[in-house]
Image 1 (cartoon, each protein chain N blue to C red):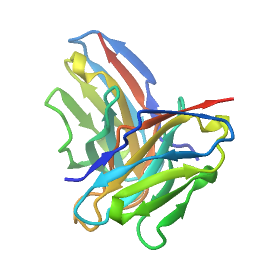
Image 2: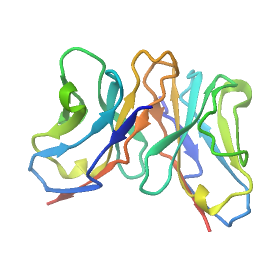
Image 3: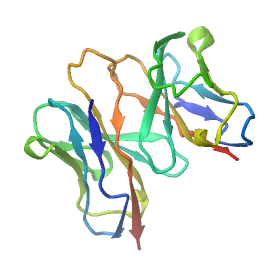
Length: 116
Length: 113
């Protein structure tokens, strides 16, 4: 079975600083990979996804993520954080070609705190 | 167009009581999913409806949980009787197809005292 590790429970950055949130997965093949964000009082919103092709994917709100097969990682990055980015971020994987349901496995989430 | 809505947003009940959570998916979405996040843990899958049928209920923790989707529109998740370990945030999601993007609701925060 697949699993997802987000090693950082909390991350604190200053507004304007760069950001990288880590995600490592365990799966026997290349999965579909996702990043979601949950702002207070909101549902999970899809930031970006990787299925195949270019390993650097662009998402909404200025986020990007890079798939590194050799490291089984899919880290999320943003060059300059805004106060509105304070939220909880979830990495998720879906097994590719498993023939089963398209159900994501989520990491524990990383809570981003942004200081002015 | 309205997104996925969930009611209530918060619920506080005592151990042994019954609680019913409701999810209204995006109109026209046949696929509806329930997930749960216990404090500090991963978001975990509970079950998946296609229209009114349960496609996959492998994540349901035990028989105190009952999910229904009569008529293939909104869904309810009943917990009876509630236990302390049932506390958490219950998310609902819907999608137009099984392999399409899932859209999530804001969740219901359940606290069992």
